[in-house]
Image 1 (cartoon, rainbow, N blue to C red):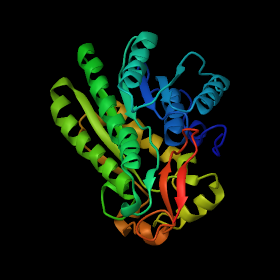
Image 2 (cartoon, one colour; image 1 turned 120 degrees about the vertical axis):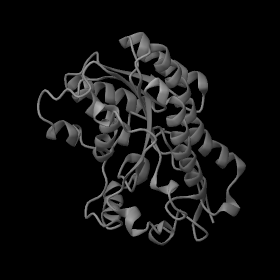
Image 3 (cartoon, rainbow, N blue to C red; image 1 turned 180 degrees about the vertical axis):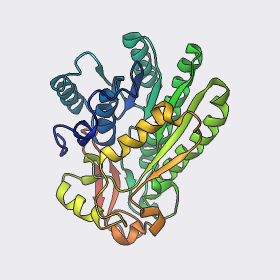
Amino acid sequence: MTNEKTTSQATQSLPEGSTRLAGKTAVITGGASGMGRSTALRFLIEGANVVVADFNQITGAALMQEAENLGFAGRLVFVATDVALERDVEAALALAVDTYGQLDIVFNNAGVGGAIGPLTETTTASWDYTMDVLAKGVFLGIKHAARLMRDQGRGGSIINTASIAALSGDAGPLVYSAAKAAVVSMTKSAAVELAPDRIRVNAICPGFIATPLADGGKPEKTREIFSRSQPWPEYGQGDHIAGAALFFASDDSIFVTGDALVVDGGLTAAGPELSRKMPRTSGRNSKFAGITKGSTGEAPELKTL
């Protein structure tokens, strides 16, 4: 169901016996595909127990099998989760405590492309769906992670997936960009509020990362486009985000909170200009309008303009 290698590059490049997250438990939403999947495997390699909370049960089952094949049986649990539903998010985090006795890291990573097309063609239903997954889902993850971590009394790390689309006016579709800007703002506010509890809250702002969510079933074409869309000559990969997440999850970032780390191969420095590079899906010249649903397993709802 994915276009990624069976074994992540992370599993090939790390020294044997690396244990930066030994004894820790992490929950990763949207962890069955793309950036979340790469991060789940990286965290397992680094010694963590991992709960993957994802909407797509097919990719979730595939990841469970992969983890077992790699020797991580018993250290990864999958739970079907809709991050727009508070009961699902609360249950996923509680599962980590019930299964492994603690919660140390929460990576609020679940995402969809959401509403695309001109703003004049964007429906309130498209707005609500996009905001529910990308903004409310992160809010719920922070809220319930903070409750559990505060009760444990030893702090923790909350990581949120934002986007370079949060940082300018032409790096993503309008509603997606607004939702990701909300994630950056929530990250900073939560970091201030939770600092006395030694709970760090940080965000990652990916650029063009070639994942199933982004490639629309055409991975080779997407990789070629992404490779020439930023100064760095290679397309972004899930493992690049996994490395940033590992930094925030580990004690290497013990004095870092409220940060929004850009991981984009220099794209923001150069200026995204997404509407010129990908005019079919962004801005007034878009050829489509509707909702894309990423790697959830659900079909997009699009009309041709």
